[in-house]
Image (cartoon, rainbow, N blue to C red; front, side, top):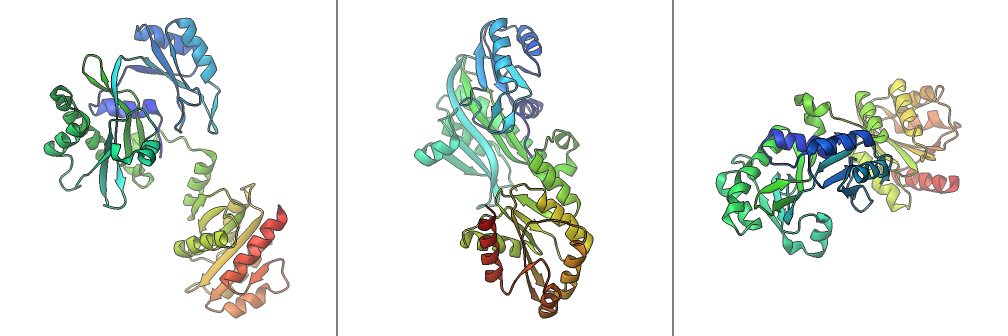
Length: 380
């Protein structure tokens, strides 16, 4: 789960990470009021959307008067940035920057530990830095049993700063950032940039945080900030119905029983030149009502022009699945071609039940995959 910059900064401030003064606004009038309240000569107006690249898109502008702040807010509010419409801006003090740095803590799948990433190339796209000059990124694996110890925080600080004045500030800053990361079950806590001001002090003038969806039940304050996109809302609704669903944007809707088989099905579709529309694991059930809900979920995606149902009958018998499908499609009406592959317990009985129906029956996983890709291409 993502939060906006101003929300991440609120968590930073709560945990003792120094941030710039700023006010979130939803109208140009509020932006002007915030500028006057801050009492600074120069202020920045920043779009608040759940995506990066705001500056490149024109979503970050400086102003030195109420007229400029109003114009900037009017220009940014309503702007579309990578598919996100800006409905609020953050008006903050423009600080006197001497140097910019990058700091983040994230979960490292390789070491299975929190990983701290640091760079003296702050303010830039970290992916670009990693791609073009990877030697400029320092990485420190944090033992979760030890945490962010004083010596580890000092090691991190010396990787960024040469002056002891900044090192002494960075040590508690890094420890507080790690404490926030752990206590709030975050998957990412990023400062880009962390700046050294002309007076030598350190400040986080941008903030990014994402949180583990599976831990939100422990954090009502974080869960309350959830602003789902249409796709995230659909995934959330699917989870409530007992499905595991992820939208992938392709044209072949997949309904599979089992996560491993679902991933293999997506790989197979790609192998034969198709594009999977989703990951959908319906679990081991032949319940017609569940199949109906799964089909409604698939068909609600306007990009889906073919559906592939791939079922392995283990405990769930294939003939029961076939009966469930036939019952379900008495309720679901669609012109979308549907390919079904049944294998496992009572697979022959299941296939016989589907003979002479609207379904295209695959004799094997490869056969079903080829049929689905062929039908999908014919629909375009």
